[in-house]
Image (tube, rainbow, N blue to C red; front, side, top):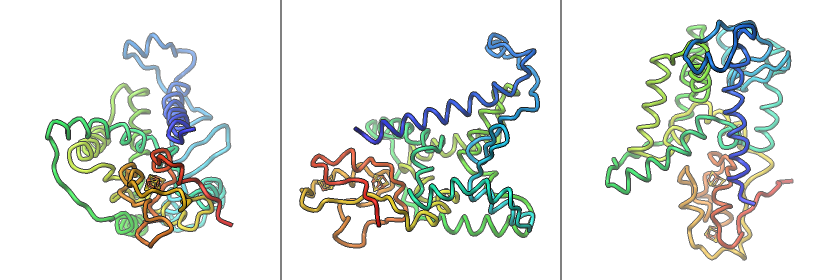
Length: 281
Ligand code: SF4
Ligand code: SF4
């Protein structure tokens, strides 16, 4: 089975939750889908289900992005145990599976994956700018955490693309309009990727993705290769959205293991079944 199909199920489910949460949070007495369709939105109520991929709570069970927990505690300069507890599940998943959040859950990653079609279309019409950007994710992460600490305010959360997307969906479904800042950021990244460089945000700019790359560097599950099956066709290199070189797996160190998010696109593209998910003991 193609891993991409399985990922799509997860990505669509996450998107559905992001839409369902603000709808659920409307005042149930006044709520009616027909009113929402007419643009008349009832006032939100205090809900026991709230949040998005940055932090999510379901009737008291809360999960938090590990970076959200870290930056909140840095900003407040306290160690807050409930926040640490809320980050434990995502932390354990990342330590085991790597930054699968980016490829299996992140709604912005999903949007940008779909956006590649627009990029391909524009490219086929000769509309393409050439832009090469080094990996600045770790620099931006360090800078943002320093700012959070010194200015006592979370910084990454303001620019974290999946969080911004979740927030904008919430604004639209609750207040009837997105925020200008969030809309500008999302549109800018979508256009930049379509016109200039495939997956530039996830590959070079996303501090949260950089943080998960660091956490998942020693992950247990990773893409591996059966050398005897490889015919060195290079299809896996073409499929990799981050420009990694799975063809080098097991040969030399060119493969940037830390950036790999276990998306499985190279595995799906391999015509001989040489690539597979291995469990490192
Ligand atoms: S797609 Fe498969 S066979 Fe082709 S180079 Fe990559 S690992 Fe080897
Ligand atoms: S190497 Fe394969 S699994 Fe890793 S990011 Fe690239 S395509 Fe996805």
